[in-house]
Amino acid sequence: MTIRVLIWHEHRHEQTNKLVQRLYPKGMDGALKKGFAGHKEFKVDTARLDDDAEHGLSQKRLNETDVLIWWGHAAHGDVKDHIVERVAKRVYEGMGLIVLHSGHYSKIFKRLMGTPCSLKWREAGENERVWIINPNHPIAEGLPEQIFIEHEEMYGEPFSIPEPLETVMISWFEGGEVFRSGVTYRRGAGNVFYFRPGHEAYPTYHNKQVLQVIRNATRWAYNPAKPWKGIHPAPNVPHDKAPVPLKVKGPTLHAPGEEGFK
Ligand code: ZN
Image (tube, rainbow, N blue to C red):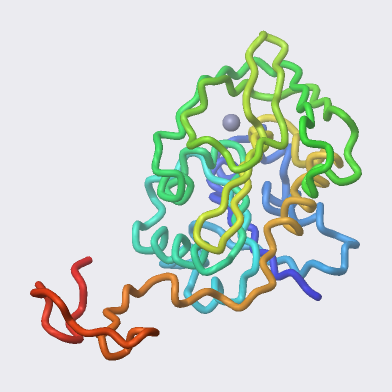
């Protein structure tokens, strides 16, 4: 079994900010990719916003991706809407999606959640303790009771997301706020995980336990079933094709075989 992973990264701060360049000389995506090194069940590739006109997310590439990992911050608005729709369709068909940190405001996350996905924030380099509150969950495999991160940006509740399928982690910050920092969803046939840590001004993606969460989440999000293509169309089933023989008993709005409204 090989899980085909695509790490998608905005890669704008690395070009403009010396601090981010110093922390992530190969890009944040380079650090994230390194987290998979030595784990042979993964085949990992990267794509960046400015790779090409499709942000490195052609239909072919998405079709060959089992789990997509998404980090964006300053340029959510530069991601083209038709590419967002393309990614959403693949999630519905069964591609896994892991959204990291400031990706809470990405078009794809908001599209799949259907809510504002807003939160409180503060950049003060404070301690974060990521408490694992569902230790039996596959995403928590091999991790201690809490992950201590020395410097992080604070994200605070209320986080305006839909009620999660599962809450795996809650973060506590030195300044007193708390946040649901590891939450799961199912959208169509796709498994979605949001994971909070990863502010670009701190070395969070060099933290072994953070990378382990992302690896665990990738395994968890992987859906080995064939893509559920039938999730998209809304077929009109004529009465003579009903599973049980049926007579038409009343008037109809649509002509036989007509497409429905979308
Ligand atoms: Zn941030």
